[in-house]
Amino acid sequence: MTDEVSGSVPDVPQEPVTEPVTEPADGHADGLADGADAPAGPAPLGLVRTPTGHPGVDAHLERLADADHLAADGHVEVYEDVHRGLREALAALDAQPVPGPYENRS
Image (tube, rainbow, N blue to C red; front, side):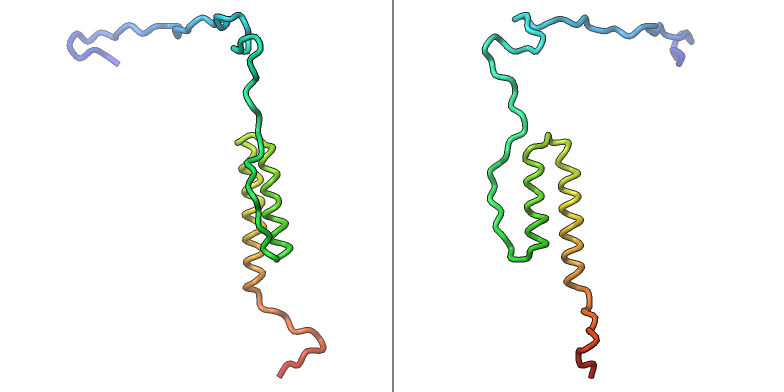
């Protein structure tokens, strides 16, 4: 890129400027003071899942409890799995029943 007034190329720094890495003022590499608790990990929200009476749907809803013990980035896989299962359960409700060999086909 050239300077439109003088036609010269402006100076561009050759190396990026970085800040030095320093330890926290308390001297602990984790940033926690003596006796301080570490950040809490994943914990259940304590949500109550009311059974629907449909075993397949209830099993998928219970699978949501697996996300309680995962970090947030692990929730997506559980949610997608549950969503897929619930969609399949709904699609099965729309499927036409196939008459059995002894049913009246009149």
